[in-house]
Image (cartoon, rainbow, N blue to C red; front, side, top):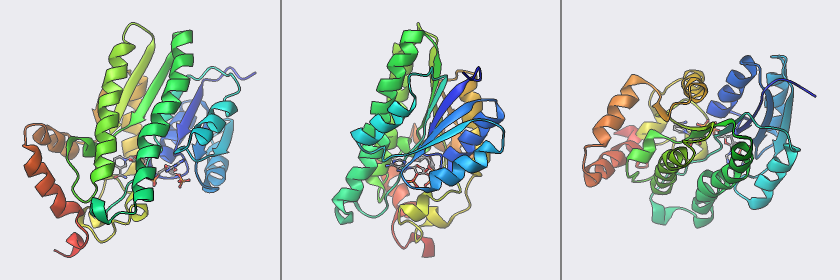
Length: 260
Ligand SMILES: NC(=O)c1ccc[n+]([C@@H]2O[C@H](COP(=O)([O-])OP(=O)(O)OC[C@H]3O[C@@H](n4cnc5c(N)ncnc54)[C@H](OP(=O)(O)O)[C@@H]3O)[C@@H](O)[C@H]2O)c1
């Protein structure tokens, strides 16, 4: 049996999650990684080059069955770190969105994430050890016109993370929320937002963002906003009226805003 620490990273096939998994591999963790599509197998092959053991699970974490399949793959091992990162966005005005796609955002970002944390978190509390990293977002500070459901899910996660951190404060289980700003990944393409200002703007580097989140998790910090620009933006958001924030968000996220 391996004596190396063991981490689970969800949404590890691309973007921030893949970079988080690389951070874990570099720090000596064995890995169980998950995503919805077969690309997770290729990510596992790349990560194995760092010398760690990597198991890949292809599962839809928007569903109870998918989360159960990932949990079953733990096979009773002690989980030293859970990096709950899988998530998806969705652009366009809420009433113009396909409701099935909007619901999938909620089911992935909120329900699946919370269900997985409930299962693994209980095991960690029983052993009085573990680290949980949740990928929230600075989007959670802003009512996201033309990305309304997504921003709502991230507001949920930012809040949820601090709440359960407080509940666990007398244990050795830490909960950290990584709040990235716009980051260069496949996110905006998948969210059908490539005709928006935010979709086409320069973005933060996913590896840098992941390292900031990983270090915060290791240090047991409550939250970390990745990058100075995003720190300023989120501080300003905290004292700006919600109506004004929603109006500003339109300029970034409304379809066609890339051209203005
Ligand atoms: N990029 C940004 O600007 C930004 C900013 C703040 C926060 N975030 C957050 O960062 C996290 C990672 O996103 P990213 O930017 O790295 O985007 P990404 O490159 O699109 O990666 C998303 C990952 O989540 C997985 N995923 C999505 N839905 C899933 C489902 N139902 N079941 C299993 N896996 C699923 C994807 O796997 P499949 O391809 O297999 O579905 C992929 O591995 C998300 O939580 C996102 O909300 C991103």
